[in-house]
Image (cartoon, rainbow, N blue to C red; front, side, top):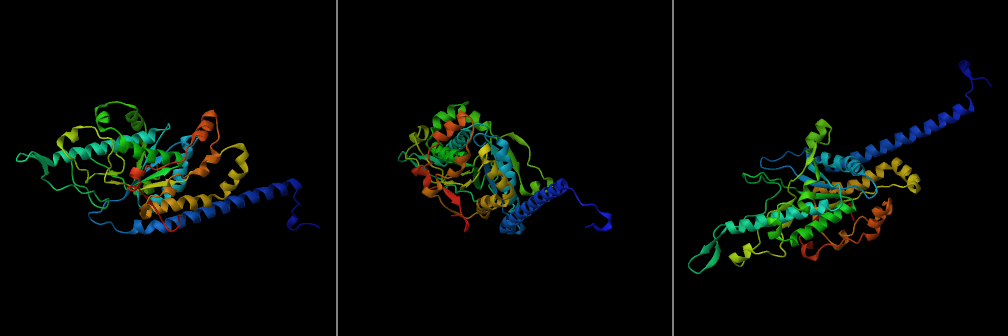
Length: 363
């Protein structure tokens, strides 16, 4: 049977090539369409915050994002994860962000420890400034009202020293989450005297080695860039203390073993499943097609952080990210890291002070 208009019957190779090309094009189109729909759904849950006019004395929210290279891979995978699954929700909700990258294990923990010790020392210094000696009875008495914890929605008092306050911490991946929690506990238990007299050290070097990417949602939308990278020494999101009391003036100069700030900012674990390995290639291809599932799964956590609904941290919030360990594949160093990875345990002394974000979609 002849084809109309003088067309020739295509060869078998042409039919096979056209069928494969058409199938691949269809898969890519469907995948991109579903991914775009998933992003729009996430954005619609938080976009009302961006459309809401800010008050005269209202400051925009800002969160701190910690990322570290997944075991057996490079930091670029974590950067892409942030750009694809975390950043769009933050931008849609008009939440400013600052990204700090750790090159080596322990840098996030040391940075958190250093900043908490700094805050504790500032709290104690403020106690000294607000206390005078009562010559009549030789005791100390408070002559000024205690400072109150600053609300993130109010303009901070003008001071000569520029301070940046963060409204929350987003830890991308199990390792970053573990180091943040460990840094909080060790920072509250660290020596104030030793840290104060120590001009250089491992924690300071590790903290200053973190790379910082700071952007506002408006800048991200207008410029389409992730910001410049630079060495960061910015403070972590710990609110100033108001309740620490001293029994005598001598205690102020002595070293204490443990003390807490009045409040910690909420800490949120963001899943980061980095699928690598030759045996996982079929699953990687499937997840490449079903990328919308990742957008939905990770988006639930970021949406909760943007909506700013918090609850106290519970024991079930500690050992998160167990499913990530399945894909920790690499050399002997990665295998050793996987074997030595212990369950994450939150220090009981600080657990009552810690909070995390929550929503109806999260367990």
